[in-house]
Amino acid sequence: AGKTTITATDAEKATVEINRTKFSDKCELEIGQKGNILNIAVKKKGMFNFDNCEVNFDIKVPKTADLNLTVGSGKVAIEKMQGELVFIIGSGNIVATGDFKKVEGMAGSGQIDIKGLNVGADLQTGSGSINLTYASATPKGELAMSTGSGDAVVNFPKNTMIETAFEAGSGKLKSDLVSNPKADFKVSMKAGS
Image (cartoon, rainbow, N blue to C red; front, side):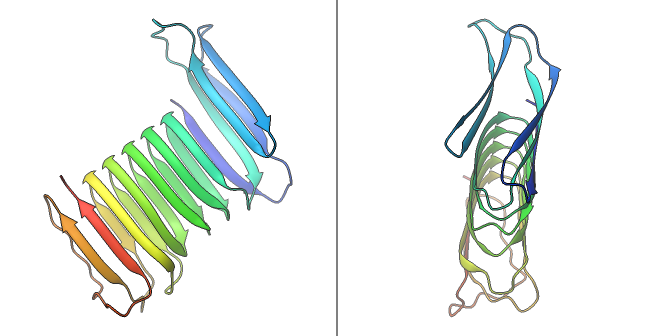
């Protein structure tokens, strides 16, 4: 658990600032680099370790870097990135702004909030909401969303044309935009079980 903040920079190298908020001698922090991949892990030592290992990270990376994140629990904030965004979060929220080239993500429980989109995305959450804001009225690709329980809200600029395909096991699905089968951008949504 903890908070991870990833911010775009014009620098060529990544930097990591670490703030250990709850970190006993039964906690372990691993940081390593292999090529252009930066790996950071917080682990508990021993089988019966009930200590809470909580670390906050402030990471600055080149703005075009691709992000591939796996987070067990905690909050993730991403600002002004322009690469790919791929994530898996067990429990926690992700809030991201940027002009991403690709967006794929899963959250077991927690909110997904992404702003500045211009491309399609594939997003899933078990319990939690999905909030997306598109920057372009002519996005590229397809947006596929799935929620077990929780709301999904997608905001598009005025005059955006989309084709919709909605499926609800429980609850309701609504679009304020008229579905247009000739649209270049398709939005599919599955909600409930």
